[in-house]
Length: 204
Image (cartoon, rainbow, N blue to C red; front, side):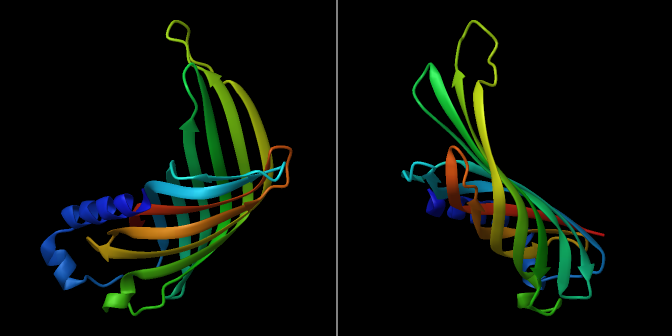
């Protein structure tokens, strides 16, 4: 799943980046605010409170990032990172969601005007919560949210990505990360998942 997703995201990125832009490698000017949105697939492991561990090879990972540069190579900010998937057999579906709101720091190790200028490494730390909802699917009645159980704890993220500058204020790229949650709750003990995403960023 991850391999197919990565190939698909690379194809999409290649399709949306004009050839002359990719070859020219426009300088990565970063001197103010940054807003990014990301979306892709994820796989991971869930350890439940009864020490049962489950590997999951499914789900989507939406992400939102916001930050401000401190100098030319560092930024601080905040982000939302999720992992959601559904399983079960009709009429009962189980919806799992692992979500995080993190404070983060991002390092841009390369020079803005060379190939390494598109590389970034981000680390985040903050609030995490994970939930499971049992939902009964009924074709006659309006679908509800079901019975939901939530555990809360600590979230950590390490993410590495590369972006191509499409214009002075816009970039597109790919990212891969590792997100870990320490929950120690009634249902979840911990989760670890790996999102592979297509990233869009705006600079101003």
